[in-house]
Amino acid sequence: KIADKVSNTKKDGGNTLICCEESTGLAATLAIAYAVKYEGISLNEAVQSISKQSPQAELDHETLIKLSAWERKMEEERTATEKEVTEIFAGLHLTSFVSLYEDCVSKNG
View 1 (cartoon, rainbow, N blue to C red):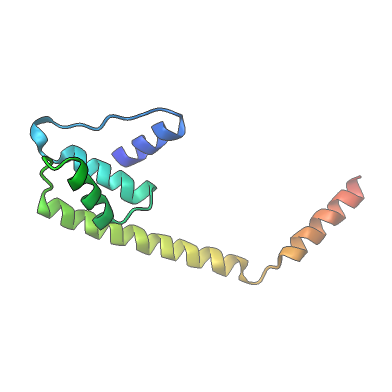
View 2: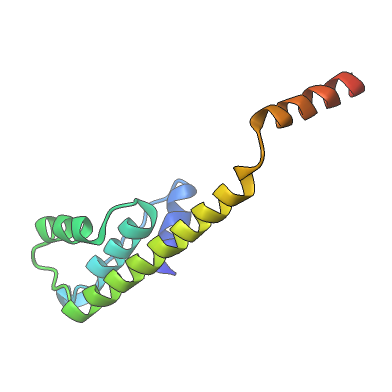
């Protein structure tokens, strides 16, 4: 949910500060989740980037395992959605849409 809020704030032109007390790694974990979900960065890339930028952040191994499972689940959902879209449009031709549009315009002026 936090990643969604960050994305919505960014879409509205705002900025978000993600922070945590005592370098527990929570802020880093939330930033990683956002990057994976909305920026299309792999978990490994996000972890490497965070580790370089904030070496003091303590990334919990268990949490990283959960994020890895979450990343796989999102990828499976994307793949399923892409297959559904492909199946929906498989039998349709762009020219039929163009023809329908041209017919509609010619009839309605």
